Length: 499
Image (spheres, rainbow, N blue to C red):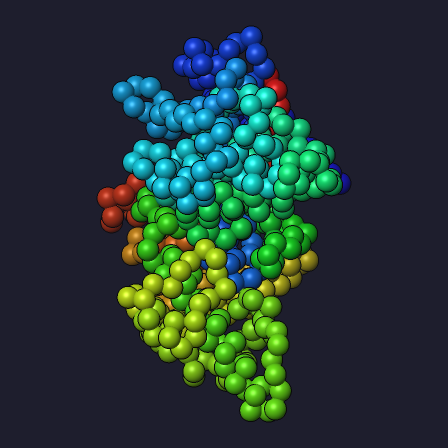
């Protein structure tokens, strides 16, 4: 049975953005012209997390927190962007740039521009225009294209590990695609002439948004966040094999079971040093394993002309990894030593730094074993969903799923080295209250703070336990936590609306 999708203009925070544009930006947004609105939710990483970039299956939930974008044409050839989340002397932060500059400057030059103080936020929006230009969907150097006003308001908290940046990118990209009517527009060739039709699919949207974050903003994220924000369904877990992005049918949670998040209020960033270092270390490990595979092949008189892992550590059997390859992976290795022996990695989003000491074996341990944990987690949830809620054995199956979340959390700390003491405390407080209907918890996304995901009953006792956890956490840390309890549809389902 199909589910009714709410009208976009009724979904938070679109009504707030709509009212504030009229009240605070009436001099910039002409009330006589139509305004197009779009919305994309944040996401809760339930299982998989950083293993997206090594090809794992991931499970993501969409939140009821979202980014909303308003778009209106201008009469000039510039883009002007406003943020209601950032203020300068009681005025929304504003960024302005000629469309021609977005077209003419290199990605590196734009990245430097947006990394200037107070400008990074604008890169997530303006970068969408640049990526559409690069992919041939629009020609920003064409002076016949009118400029744009873009206004942003988001309720996805920054630095909480729930994809605030992906929500902004997806909301902006969806708005631009429908404003320029690109869903069926021809892609232009190198000389600007249309040569073929390139349909824009949800995964195409997500891939272009990932490009914005990697190339224009300069943060080395995988594609999981953008796909979740674009393609997620309310009340279900999005499942995707990240090779690079194979969507599977949504995973419907067992009856009476939900996933929620608690924001530790410790900010994290995928642009932070340890996230990038762990990612780079995983790809260094991939290269070492591949070189060892070639050595084994040569010893047997064979030439290995392809990567048996197809570029992804998730495709390596954990038992083969432990027996055949792990003994040859150094626990730590400097970038200079790695480059001298193995050359470069296949990862375009990170660079091996000669003077950095990388935790290679630990990173590979996390990624290879995390891929198996996610598969087992899904199997247990599917098994529980097929059982009668009154079956006494169902709790044991859900406990197994929850304990895989605990194992993932421990691996984030000890192997990925992306833990945080405050998140450890939240997970411990969940374990202490398991009898109230809590099954498991883990740090999410890029780690090093952010949000903890929890698998729990939808019950009054679980609600009381969550309230107790938040109160005790605040008492012990002095930090005020924030609960993410709701869900909402992805941007592709609600599309955009003109008002």
